[in-house]
Image (cartoon, rainbow, N blue to C red; front, side, top):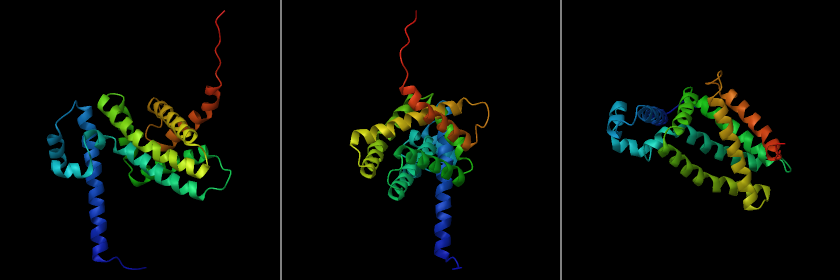
Length: 216
């Protein structure tokens, strides 16, 4: 085993400190929205950082409050690229997308034991604040073209089909999140969320096959 040098130890300490500060700012931002909107100055004071430090990490309160969801989707994008490069020819792209999302979700939960709590809180806040809805729409609008391009490149599919595949998957994720938020048990269990996603995906095809029934 190669012993750690003082510089590597210091670098690891700095990284841990940054991660702790980032998580503390996220929790403070979420609590500020839940409390009705204390000022950014007060929020930073509660964490013990300056506004300048805050803006090194985040673009605004919405960005900070939604960090758990953004980390999940950014991790998904990285993992999806890796999986698409290594998958066998003929594999279901939709299945690869779902597997990448599940892996990204588990990675987030393993990296931070409190992630599932802050992620759940982020989803609740999204349902209560228009500014967070707008922020998340912007985040999704920025993420979708890159994911769709990766799918199109590896599947040899037209851009529209690749984009529709991903956007349909996002719809399934949103349905799973809604079911998970309303589930009476397992609120802090990531596998319960992923089970809800399995159910939502399994319901996609029957949903598209619905037919109008005329009352008689």
